[in-house]
Length: 204
Image (tube, rainbow, N blue to C red; front, side):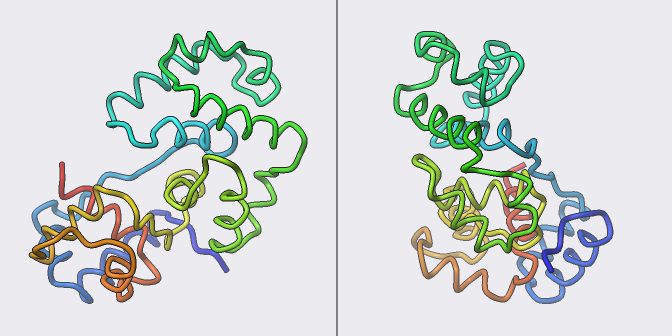
């Protein structure tokens, strides 16, 4: 069964991670166990939000997505497909991201992508399904699991912020990537989403 992040499971996760990893415990003590939640809307709007966020600063992505929401009303796949490219460009979307978002809208409109069906799937199945879409890679899929679905053991290992935070946390000479970051995170299962939140909170 897929466990979601709620007040009770979050508390359990923080206790477990503190016991299993002294470095995470140090961050939690500094933060007084207060960590920032990564939350995005579920469904079409949430996935588009994450595509907009790809390779952008938080501030830039927030500004562009805010303009996009004002340009597409209501924010539905059908409406999205009726909007001209020049409108998307005017809010700050690149042509590549316009193509990605239109592809996602089409997949939703034709029922190729069913967000309700995702709820019944395992993390692996959700990632597999989402990454079938052009422009949705492992980072976007894992962030959808974490931020939009609230799954407690998602792990966006390719996230630059996580890599830098782990490098600092573990006093590594180089920024960890690929298998190294997954090996480091192995003991944090089944609460890697919460470990990610702790690591991101170390920037605050």
